[in-house]
Each structure stands twice: as C-alpha cells, then as structure tokens.
Length: 111
Length: 118
Image (cartoon, rainbow over all chains, first blue to last red):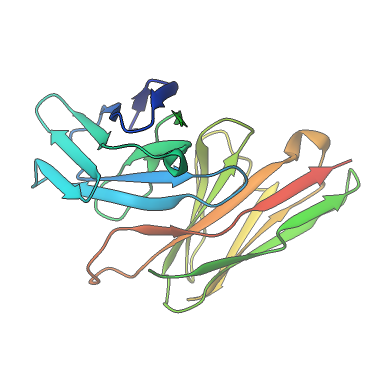
C-alpha cells in the first residue's frame, strides 16, 4: 500500500516569513495530492491540491509543487500570518480512492 | 464546497455499550464515504471505505466486527462501535467523496465525533 512521510513534524516561523512542508510517497500510481489544514478539535479543511499532470499550483499565498520522478511534493506558504498556525496534513491517493495521510506538521507562526 | 455533517459531536458511554455515529452528505450524493480515527496530536488513520449498497472495505488491522459500517443511502453512512472499551476512545471523522464523473477527487470531511469510553 501507499506510505506517505511528512517533514518536519513541527515548524515555527516568524510572521511574514515563509514555511515549507515536504512529503514523500511510495506508490507511483498515486495521482492526486491534497493538503489539509486542521485546527485543534476541528475538521480538516482542504487548502490546495495538485494532480500528477501538473508540476506546480498556486493560490494566493499558498503553493504546492510536485516532483513525480522523485515522488515528493511540498507545500509553500508565503507571508505567513498567525492565523496560519495549525496542523497541516498532506495526502496521496489514486483517482478518488482512499487517501493516505502524512503524519502532520504543526505550524506555529510567531507574531 | 460540499458539506458533510456528523452526529453526535461528542459522546460519553460506559464500557461494553455500543455507540452509533452518523455521517451525512448534505448537498451532494456520496457513493463513497471514508471513516478515519485520529488520536491526539496524530494523523488521520483510515479505518474503512464505505460504499453505498455494498459491504465496507476495512483497512488491515481494523476489526470489522467491532466497527460496523452501514452505507444505506447516497447521503448517509453510519459507524457503530460495538462493545466499546476505553481504548476505543478517540476522535472519529468521516469524509465523503462526490461521485465519479464530477470534477474532483476531493474528500470533504465531517466535523468529527469525540468518543470517550469510561
């Protein structure tokens, strides 16, 4: 089955700086890679996703890059704000099948 | 985006009792729903895939006789934790995926159910 690894487990940045979270996956058949943000005690919220036919996708301060050859993808948050503080999860799946989540990254943005 | 609800949000029960958790897709039909379990400060662990009108597919290590899943309609899946014990205490989250043929593979998550077994 798919195995998704995520690093770092915790990340602290100063407000305004950038944050980068990296994930690797094992199954080359995986073709859909979403990123979720989860605040304490709440549901995961989709923040951005990317499919395997695209190398990069941006949405305002958030971007995701995908390297299919190396089987890794990364989340980039620029101009971080305190409200970006949360746990972020990457996931990998194959065409609508089950998601396999990474272990999560707890991001703290220091004002 | 699509909305998924879950009920109850919190439940406390005695050891040995059974608890049913409902997951509903409110504004779309979900042929497939997923059930996850999340321990504090840990990731979401997929328990099972629930398909409307058929038996659920359980992940390795998940006891199907303990965690009963029923997906009786395109908008409702239920998870029943049978003979619950304290080690079953956890945050249970469901998600729903829109049917194939729609524009996304995205899963929409419910708000979760906090189960505490005394």
